[in-house]
Image 1 (cartoon, rainbow, N blue to C red):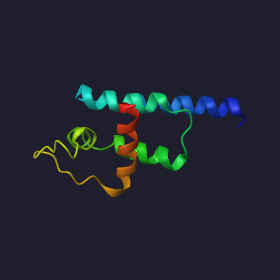
Image 2: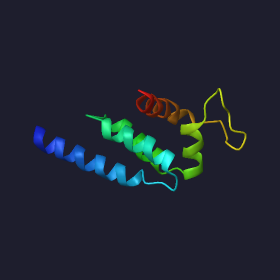
Image 3: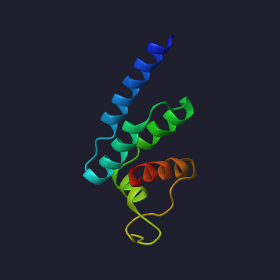
Image 4: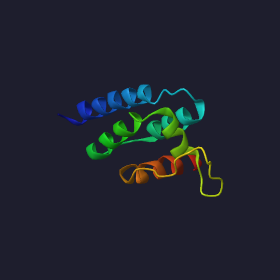
Amino acid sequence: MNDTDLQQSFELWKKQMRFAAKRGNLETELLLVNFINQLQSYPQEDRQRLQQLLAQNDQDLFCWLLQTSEHPNPACDDSIPVHFRSLIQQIKTVYLS
């Protein structure tokens, strides 16, 4: 694959991820879509992790993305799976920047 094909493939993947980021609540969707939109490149392993994250249920994603240590929500399970912690932090950082 040449550079153009790789870029087109990456853009197609981003479109698929934006579609997968459509959620039942606007807050979660905004965080996810904003993160996906800012990606210029993304390693394959990280792509798979993002796809796995987007396969999680809406309530878990909402809690993981919006809960803060300063304002814990007792209705949320605060145990973000270890393999998602770094990605969740990246998403929060992008949104807050």
